[in-house]
Length: 314
Image (cartoon, rainbow, N blue to C red; front, side, top):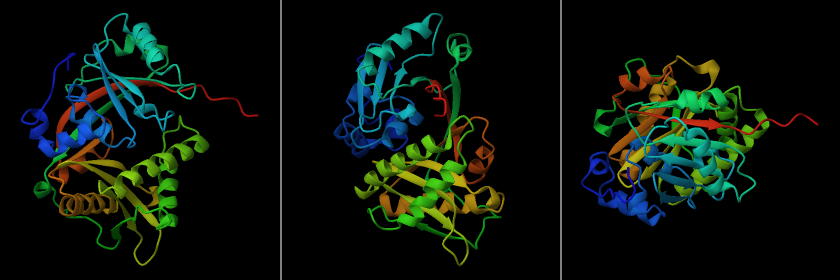
């Protein structure tokens, strides 16, 4: 999206569930009309950020901030209009420092570009060779009527929504945190990731208390052990899935498929979502599963991130 271009209901966004209601929700949440990403993945990434999120248009890029959570790598970033070209590495880093340098808690560097065709530009030459991790995600979408049960879905687990009110279902929420920590990438240490996951869930629960979706868990038959979980944040007429995770010992049992389908239908029935979005790593094994449930690949988006160096113990 180039500087000054305004996306309004009736364009691509309306096609995938924004409409007038969703567009107004974006604006009321602090997203200016010219500061709406054209990618559905990046747009719904904004949806799931804390209530105090800020999106600002600059010349050639968007600044996306989460003031209440400055250590969230993908909640504080620069989203450029186009992929990087030769020389952009140093230039983008300078712009990031100009935007975030006043907050000493922001120690990472994260950049993405608002193309939906998987274009990499000079990402390898400008960033990967300098220690950045390249993230490539596939965006899948479905309407609720197209989301269908898998023939081998697990019918023994109990799927239910957690209560977002503080003080209720806390033991189950803690199990969700533990599940996310166990599934983290090896480059993240356990302690810092636990703090991150707890903070992110607290932010998302705040959205749920305002009626913007729900968090769903699959409980072991007859018990209270969380074996799988996911969230769906609803903005206007679209819902974005978050953190679809299954305990290692319970994978390949049809639990994830059951969870995703019930979460999708519940989100549509209770929160009015007409379009559902999942973003997954381009090499993630579950992409085929999502497609078998009725989701279709729509976008491939890219970004790079350099996390702070780990401090030595002691």
